Image (cartoon, rainbow, N blue to C red; front, top):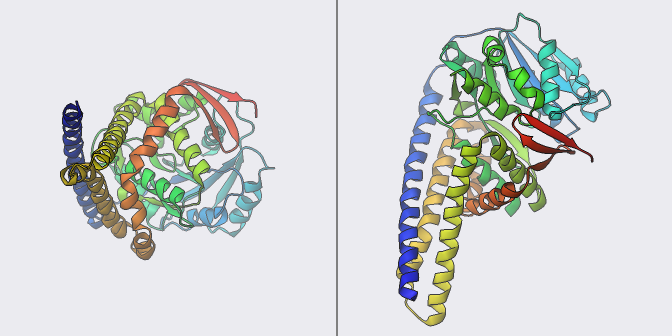
Length: 401
């Protein structure tokens, strides 16, 4: 009986090792893509751009983040900061930024959301205030701090009419250490490297550029009318027109974070619930991959403990148990190499926090597995103090607080 149990583990471990080797191969390809993009000169394309950012609450680093939006190396743009109400603590900060900025900053009051997420409602209100002269919309988040070349590079790829939208992703830089922050950083890193040179990219709400004509043709504003997830609704609308979503790794946005375990699970569970509702196939595939890794590793550890207790030699078994984890760490090393080149000014911080992306990578599938199981049984989330039930991509209920 024990022999059959071991044989089954060897089969599962072999499949997991093959998947791990493939992941390392993909990681090396991702690093190559980053290096090519960083050395390529952006296309000369300088349309009039509206930078749109929804704000809520006096979050940490907010003023510095908003000021960074006013300092892009790009002449033809204006900023539209949208809030639910003038009583929001972020309004005073946004007004102060507008007074200090050399770039024109518009403050938009969206009002109370009805049947959609507050962020989405803020974005819809901002769109309504943008004059026809603006040819490109660029969406960004208030918790990131993109560098000066960011806007030029985000917009440049839209010179090709084959591209429906250009997107990027955040990279978390924890303000302090701790396992929860390390897990969040490594968890997010896996999403970053999911994006690449393929057809499975999705728009990220904190960094997406889209031509106004494509936005209107795709009916994005209407698709947002009942949505919570601005980015997934935008993704589905753009893909519905046959447009390509182009990923720009050179435009990754640094985002300072600090969470405890409760915050880690709240954020990651919310992301997975949103993915289940708006991208069911991606949710199923991601859940299956991470559950398979987690169950295989747990199976191996239990088997290893049993063998040790029985006094059986376990060197071969221990090596096989460790190989999938080591391969996950190798892919983490490739991510660090890419990150050092994307953020040369933050090289020291990247290296100091590299253990979060390498060593901790072996444990991230367990977090994803928890997220998957939670998202399988609920569609309720809490986002910036507002509770929602995601009934479907076309229906959102705002729940009483």
